[in-house]
Image 1 (cartoon, one colour):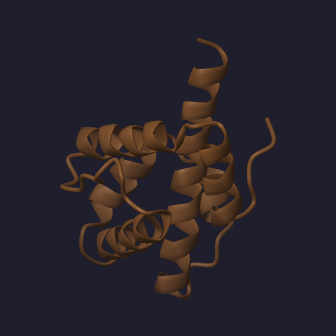
Image 2 (cartoon, helix red, strand yellow):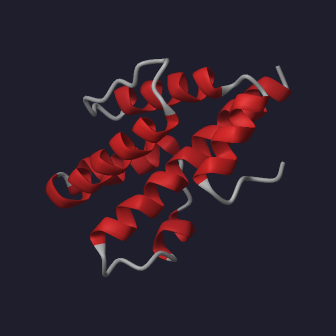
Length: 116
């Protein structure tokens, strides 16, 4: 599996395979498991998804760091990938972590679709 390198490529791939809705459901499931009050509507526009996810990750980093770490653990975002990011600019960091979250969730959805 070749993972997308941009948000737009990820969304395009999800739409081509008719898996965008499942990606949203997977996000909702993992946020619920992490006890984070965020529930995306299944018909959310990709631009809104990106904005809300980025905003949520930013707030978690700033205000609830333990919840942020728990979310990354539950979603199973690679610790090495997170450590490789530049943490000097929290806004930029939260944007990059949001994309890592989406990529990992996309992996789960893609594999489940391919092998079930």
